[in-house]
Amino acid sequence: LKTGKSCALFYLVMMPMINPMKKMISDSRFALRTFFRTLTSAEFLKTPQNEPVLSYAPASDERIQLDQAIERLTKQVNNIHAVIGNEMFDCGFTGEQRMPFDHKTVLARVAVCDKVCNIAYIFLECILKIFFSHQNLIRKAIDVALDSRLAWERMPLEKRAEIFFKAADLASTKYRMDLNAATMLGQGKTVAQAEIDAACELIDFWRFNAYYALQLEKVRLISSKDVQNELLLRGLQGFVAAISPFNFTAIGSNMSSCPALMGNVVLWKPARTAMLSNYISFKILREAGLPDGVINFIPSKSETFGEVVLPSEHLAGVGFVGSLPVFQHIWKIVGNSVENYYNFPRLSGECGGKNFHFIHHSADFKTAVACTARAAFEYQGQKCSACSRLYIPQSMWPEFKDALIEICKEIKIGDPRDYSIFMSAVIDRPAFENICSYIEHAKSSPSLKILYGGDYDDEKGYFIHPTLLLCSDPNDRIMKEVSADNN
Image 1 (spheres, rainbow, N blue to C red):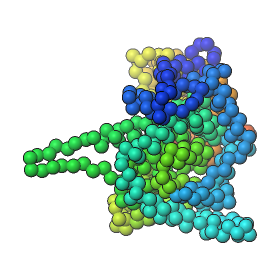
Image 2 (cartoon, helix red, strand yellow):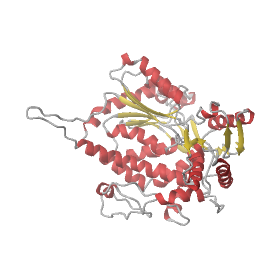
Image 3 (spheres, rainbow, N blue to C red):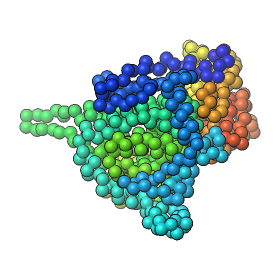
Image 4 (cartoon, rainbow, N blue to C red):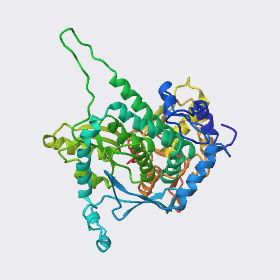
């Protein structure tokens, strides 16, 4: 804490969590050639364990390969299609994903399934794409998913699980650096945050989900002499809508792939600011053998997607991670339409939170300070688990405040391609303006005092410096409202 090193906070907390690297088994049917050491699904099935976290130390194999992936994705504008069954649609590439730390740089062009048609396509004899460039394209995705449902559901679970084990191996090796690079460039994550999310957590989702699904299939119900009880695992009758957030690449893919693993068909609407990383993970699933139409990749505006999907009589479930108002809207639409569905749609939602630290006088002081700073400012606080409130005994406060401010002074902010930073930019302009509005509120509120920070700058990227506020009113809006929208 007193070294003045900009990355000391990360290594102090994270290094004890890093597992030793596991040696690859060369004769595994899942093994893939790579320079860095990872875990294979064959090894995982022998001893289930988490994917090892790579260090990305200077001159390491993974550091060299990640630099190459970053350079490649930076030099080109990546095209992201809408994918329905075995068809790819460009919809005029009317959307863009920009780098949040360099918002003038376009990272990807996105095929947005929107109501707006590009009239120029008529003269290019692409009238069919024009017809499918708005809500009809989403309706087409529903039809394709439903046509794929029975064959996918009837595929033995073991065969379905094999696809996700293979996808995990592809993500662990062949596409690991692409996933991390896209997450760093498109979502503003540091190399450490990208590795534990886009690589490790995604791989763990695919492996552990498949592993536990296979365990669930082994369950045998208790039967009596005259009665035989059986457990049948089957998909829902209809389709599942997966509406994923920007802040975790792994969550986006998990929200679509987890229902699919259990025999469901899915329409996946990725967050507009996480398109590239989500598209890469989708393509990994396709390369691993996921059949056409099981997961359909639908970049779309939320309102356009909702207008088609939520009233559909075939809606069987909604998985959502994002803001509270949006999920409340989804709940109301489904509730008001419940008599129109063939099924009772299952709703699963995770919304923003106001996580807090409650410090007891018996707490280890240095650990409490370091973990509070890390929880508050890691990934710019753009997590539902980010610490946005701190409650601490008055007797501890003066020393705790000074120690917390010293850490804030040492936090380095910048471009995630600089491996020494701890924070980068927030995700986009709406997020930047929303968070800045709370800082401006703090400047004028009699119940709030800025202890440190309060600076922000959007000339190059959406940068907001670590800010500490002292609040004397527990009912102030800053103590109750969520300042980040994950969708």
